[in-house]
Amino acid sequence: MSYQLEQEKFLMPSPAGAYYCISDAADNTARGLLRQFLRQEKVALVTNQQVESWFTDEPELGLKTLHYLQNLGWLQTMEEGDQVSKAPLEDLLPELLEPLSSEGKALLTDSQGFCLSSTGFAHETAEEISALAADLVTLQDRHKGLLSNNLKMPSVNWGLLDAAGHSQLGFWPLHIGSEMFSLVIAGAPCLQHQNFLQLTWILHNRYYTESKTGEVDIVQNRSRLSSSG
Image 1 (cartoon, rainbow, N blue to C red):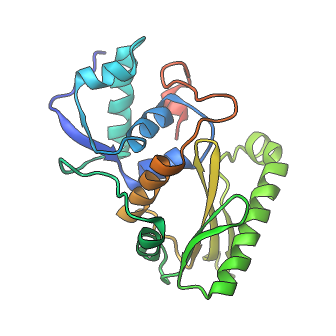
Image 2 (image 1 turned 90 degrees about the vertical axis):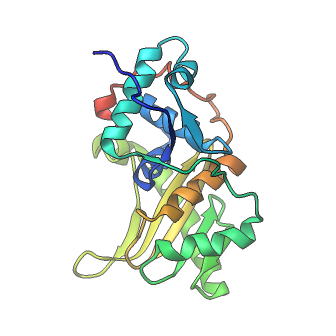
Image 3 (image 1 turned 90 degrees about the horizontal axis):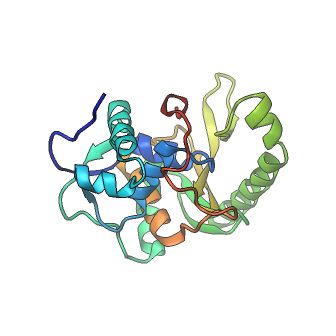
């Protein structure tokens, strides 16, 4: 089956696509293409030629992957000229984080427990939660064999649950290349919000670095697309 774009579009990952992209450090073709979008400073005008240039060795795979992502709703049409914000993080993050929580309480911390920004939490509380998030990153790494291999849970989010199983405080690892951040959300998470896309876009532009083993080219990984979900 031959894949072709019917028309040129300005495309970016949807919040769901952004979540899939950052939910695991493992590389596959779908995640590699999503990262290609998120690492750009401006919304990409996607053409058949553009996709083929990203997949020089196997252009048909690029168009097939794009079709797959669109069918999943992991890509969305954006306006021409949209670009990632260059404003200081201390100005951007509070407004980005607040809508991601049903209670307006959220924070972003790095893997060492340094709180980059918080909203809705007292300063001292935010610092302690950030330290807890770093401990959970270490705990997850220690048990990744069990979680990823035995239990088949490559994307591991941690939460404090009430008796009905509803999240009271959730910890969401964000894999940005070789960097890891933790998004902590009080109450119900609202990761379908466009602010989540904006957050991941900004983080990719400012913090993305290649993994220790080197970035896997989006063409070289032959993982079956059907196993990407």
